[in-house]
Image 1 (cartoon, rainbow, N blue to C red):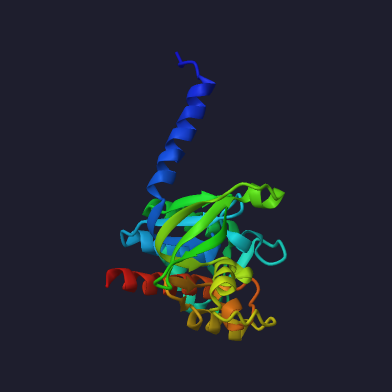
Image 2: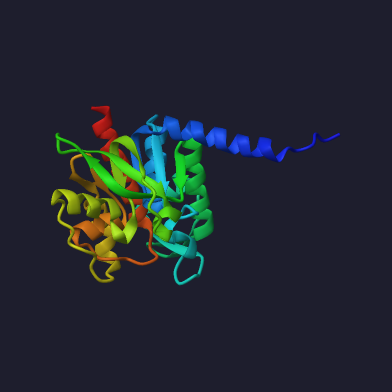
Length: 256
């Protein structure tokens, strides 16, 4: 016979478990801000290396713009250079034409998210970063966070802070963290995003993936927004490769 469910026990379970997680992740090795494809790849690969990684996403769902594919057709295109990452995360693909490979957007997001979760990434959705912590050493050392509904409704509710060894701005076109640092510290220079030019953008997004302020890396479209790179639409190979590049660079710093 099934045991009767107690609603208060259910509430206590949710509150107590997440409360413990919040306390544990007040300090982490890497805070990845933005749960799109580049952020997911970066977080998953870093967590696989044993680092304590929190992924902060302001929306309810993880996955960024990949869910919708191209104009709500749930398919994405990946170029030859990034097919190995589809294979790495066990994402099925098919060849459309030489150099052009398609995969299902929903499957891609789901498997990237599952890989990050399996690696130990802790997700903080509906959470926004409203400010940054930079102290006397001139290094980004933490983030000021609040619930996204607080920001959306304009409530006067003070935030909390978390400390991170490194922060990765994977917030897409808005480059939220880089802009906050630039506003408060005068750098990095934010050049803004260029027009659609897929071939140029796919190459540039990987080369633009780098540390732009002590303790702050940019990847994905945030990288192109900082350095004036172009946009590329629903071809996502550069996003995956950029997330990998960010993970390798951050791991190199943490390892040294």
